[in-house]
Length: 119
Image 1: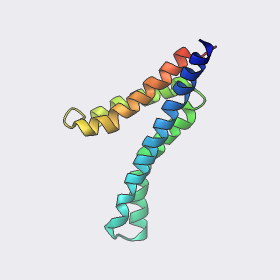
Image 2: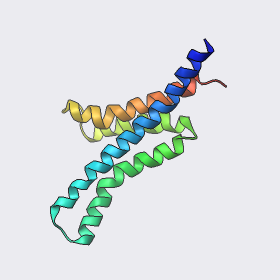
Image 3: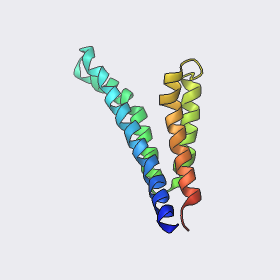
């Protein structure tokens, strides 16, 4: 029984972190679309920074929640709810899944691991 519990704890420890890293990488890669606009250097850098803001916010939340899981649980859930409202997720299911439900799932996984971990 102890081996099964250790395996579950490891999966619950790493799954929200790896899923958050994958989401950060996805948003970072999507920010490269500004390079095809043929603008000057400074407008391109400004546009790149603006497009990287979601990835930077996610990275900051993940960085803090790596140590404090309660912050990850609360931060990612709030981010998922805010993204659902801001991007009107009820109008487009793919948008809702990617931008809202994935952060919500990450937050729930952080909360679940915090609940089942061994004291």
